[in-house]
Image (cartoon, rainbow, N blue to C red; front, side, top):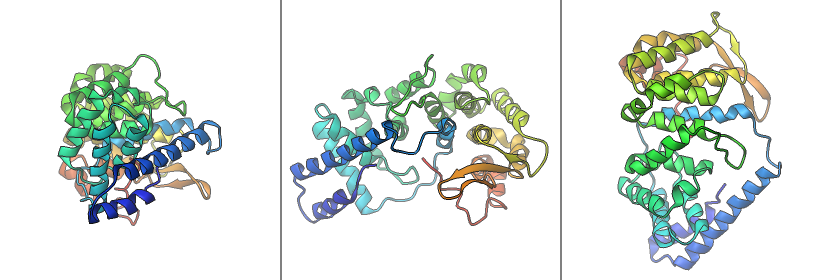
Length: 329
């Protein structure tokens, strides 16, 4: 993780008057070094072992935030500084760029400055940063944020999503499923281009198949949405209260998000999501191990499916104390 504390202090000084570029560079180099050390620890096994099913967390990208929260002045200043570093060092220093992007990658529920994002997208493409560093999971998140500002980033994501062989990052996780989810989040026009292939490749056995289902459903075309709904229906047990075990339950949640990506076109299939909410899912926790909980993430899929879906999202269990709107990005 990039350490932000030093930059926070320097940001405050900058707003008071002057920000020496040398000091900025020193801070960002230190931050990048910390990120490299963290990656090294992961590669040498000092971190908690990776679980294969977690590659399916890409499904969360379909549920991209539509209502954003304004950034604080400090957050806006960080973004401006990030753009400054990209402009100064875009063609010369991968370390500076990596550090700047670490600061730039903020939570998806925050509002972003469209002009800054547009400039950043252009810099990252024309400097060759994309696709050179796209295997870094953080960079996929940045590409997700900036894709709407540059068709070349969309094209890069399309090539990754439908690559014939796995594209692995530093933790040996295939990034193609995540790229598919990101494409699904970019709207029906892009998804429709890939609908036929996505239907052929969709399935419930792995995240690559459910990622294809998300793209198919995001086209909002009736045949595709019906096919995805049938896939989900086939996976759901008939009995309410059934506990869905790992890793299969992650695939089921991803198919629920696929229906969410279809928006109003998925209205006829809301009862499937209601069935899913009568069940429990097994999840891993850091403190007590595996526990059984209501799959409240499904409420986000509800909230995207027209008026009826939004109404259901306001009812139990979606209106519980658990804040289902805050999920990993």
